[in-house]
Length: 111
Image (cartoon, rainbow, N blue to C red):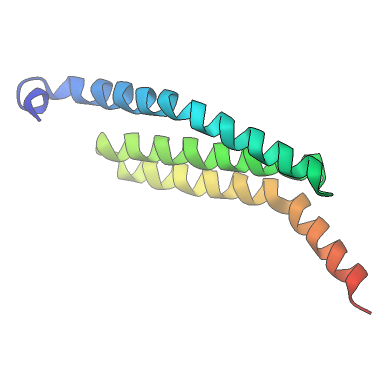
């Protein structure tokens, strides 16, 4: 808030730096989650590709939210909404193989 009063042009840089620092600090937790998912996938019969796709979708969701927050902080809500929409389209397009696999399993189960 103090920086915003005296040097408002530097606020976006501070926001970027703080966001990047928080994201870097959470990578250790994210790597633990990835290891847990990989161990669970090896114990049960889930295709490794599905776990990889889920991790990619989660990463895209995190990065999209990060970019949207930065845009909103800088006052660019129109760009933020476009980034949000683009992230959702990418996530849906990546989830098509998972949905197809689920539908194939349902067809096999149903008589």
